[in-house]
Image 1 (cartoon, protein in one colour):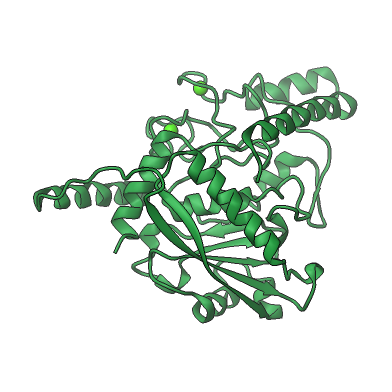
Image 2 (cartoon, rainbow, N blue to C red):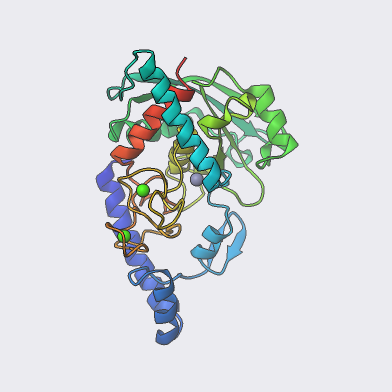
Length: 330
Ligand SMILES: [Ca+2]
Ligand SMILES: [Ca+2]
Ligand SMILES: [Zn+2]
């Protein structure tokens, strides 16, 4: 389990490293200034070359811009509005039936979890992660969602292990994804199905939203890169927060940079608006300077390094609770 203080220490060390690297490898001062002002005055430089999963990027920003950090489908503005209209309608309907729609106490809702390990044969190098790493991933979820005071308690209901070369490299929207999930998925909308594999394209993970369940129940769930679990090799995304982040989508959250500097941005009022995804751990970043607050770079729903993301906001917890009541509570 990773305590917030140890993560903060890691974050500070990381910030120090970033500065050093930028100073060592950075371009001429004038170019640095121009690029910095384009993404926010306090944003660090784009940094040195970034190698991840065998792909080499000019820098970490290029990796972020490639869309591989999270391949959960983008929800456009009209769908966003429809989802929030549906939430309001659901609440009104409940109230009209004399039922109160309130937030539930911390730790009061059990979420059964099925963990499906897809491998390409035996051994860690083939993605066959051991039970100890599954337990460590569950502990990371417990720390994140428990630490935020959410109602959710994740309980491991079962583990499956499947050797399948095609599912092992499945990516979103493919026949392999569809076959994998249709074959293995357990439970109803309340059950969290986590699949780990060695997804193709250099990706880290993807999830479905609660509002997707009705039309595609078998596709519901979260897929994570097997080496993103605690102790995995996907540095700097190997403390298990790809799982935390993707489960956030599964609970109905958008990225903190959804909608950029617009008034409603991510549909959560207490996460400051953010123009674009943050990466690394850029302390003090402020890309929506006309709106209060610095960018929520410590938030699990941004794109920063695992050591940097340590929190959900109260507004996010409320949204997850309501979305869970609307879509995932029997
Ligand atoms: Ca917000
Ligand atoms: Ca701001
Ligand atoms: Zn995401």
